[in-house]
Image (tube, rainbow, N blue to C red):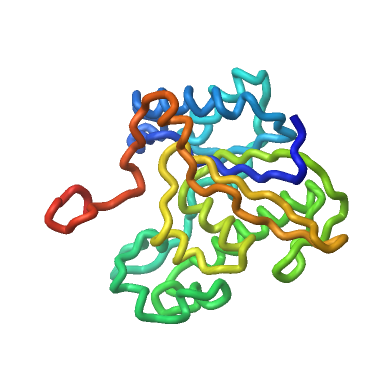
Length: 243
């Protein structure tokens, strides 16, 4: 059924087997429960990362609905890197001591200009994703202008993206004009979690996106499936669960 706003739904892939870029046995169970949930929606368009774990997660939903997804290269896991010695490593999985003491990390227009982040390609990759989501939303009637969206044609469409945690946070940071560092390190979207943004056009011709739910995994609980641990770290240092 049509809603009273446009919905942008961002889904993280199911429990991953990174060694083969696919899903674990648990991940396939999660994807099946997710498909039952998403198949009930009236979806205008599906978009998907080119990576196997996202495509496999989407496959069960697409098969159930007899649909296909448009593959977008910028929806792959975020490729932003920094330099640590001679190595290039992920910019989005950093220890608190590496960034929380510097105010620049908390702004969307300065986080990538810090000494650490400017050591490689973080800014370039960030802007690539920002441009990608801007182009997609403009295609669906909403053009990013400053911190709001110019409404070219309002609609009640539902758009679904199958992607990854880090790139999801980049997308959200751009839409909300905040730093992805805060989202990467202070929020967590577990495997098959569903994040839903809705449009509000309180002033004619101008819209904002609001987060109606973040990282929702109610479909897993409803199906009796425990959430995966992926994207989390040890709660107490002594636990040595995952440092």
